[in-house]
Length: 231
Image (tube, rainbow, N blue to C red; front, top):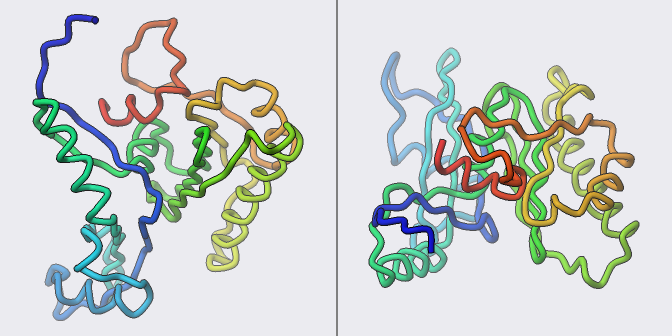
């Protein structure tokens, strides 16, 4: 309807049923890059990862002393295959297919942040510290069956649990209470719900202000994933 002619797209997949974890992999020798075999071996020790069921990707985010710190992400093959088939069926070529949480991190573009992405059937919580995705979680929920107060409480508790889990494993580098909270997603337009979450958590709410240029009437928080994919 807008006359868009491009046939190559960047798309995202839900984080539902996906796994992500930062693992430490010993270096095989000084200066040597991490190997696929070493990553998979270590990942299988801490995550229920199966190459038969998941597409597995990873990236080295730091090398300290004799260890590589690697972010590992596993996404169900069925989910990705279904989306690829649908896009190709629509005559579209895929430029980038990214996890929704990663797109949100790029849209926010902060070294330290909490991101709550609220949709009608799922919500995502992403914790970023030192510019790295420390935790990406997607949960199902049914907000239509909850009162406004209960929905806000449910989301606030989930945020506190995510931050608490991170703090318990990083006693020397706990999440600062000044860490900004970004609320995005379709339901971020529900101002009463957003206000209800805000008063229940210690982290200050910050509006999304991406560097990407966009029309002033675009509700950026509701299109945060799209903005991240375009960034």
